[in-house]
Image (cartoon, rainbow, N blue to C red; front, top):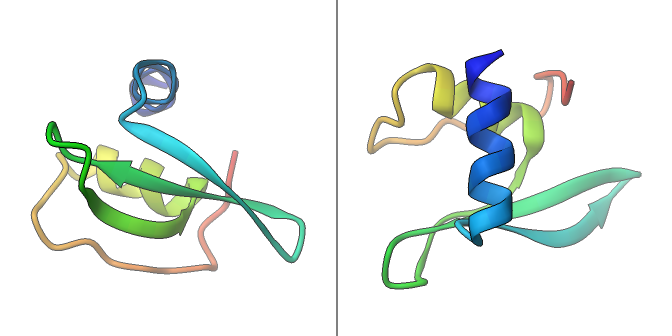
Length: 68
């Protein structure tokens, strides 16, 4: 639940930016304070997992994660 609220806050603040869709699933970039993407073209489930893990420096792509 907390990760979903954090996702919404990042989306609202411009840290997470929508980047279109792939196979009907929305894609996002996650930007640093400088506006430089630190995560490019990730699904919501991948970003939620990254937030749940405490936002480690190494990001793991896994398109099998659910977007809920």
